[in-house]
Length: 125
Image (cartoon, rainbow, N blue to C red; front, side, top):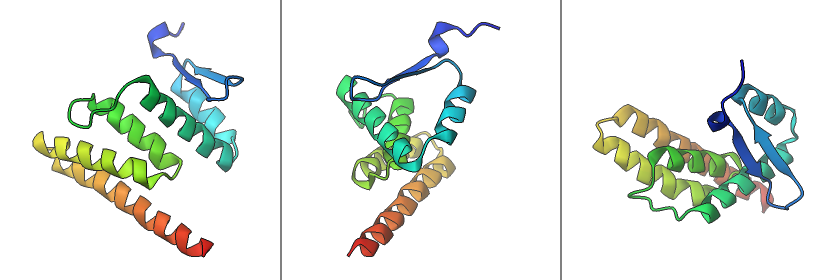
């Protein structure tokens, strides 16, 4: 069947020359699976930066889905400083909705990222 336009995902990689558009999650996953790790990191960073530049992020009132997507991109490029505040804000909102298990999963993701970040900085010294 034909893909409806509202399901298309479009990303500009940030350098003006590269532009990605995926009409189906399966295609997006296939392309990302084939990319080199550094390319994936750069793509996630570019998407997160574009999302932040596109709209002001307000931790208390922004759409929770948007905050989770932004968290995932910052997490995927290894930027703990940007991902952690998002995890805390979303986690608190999930707790307010009595979704404690989901909140704990998000906190756990952020903590794992923190440990990985600390491990990586130890290896650079």
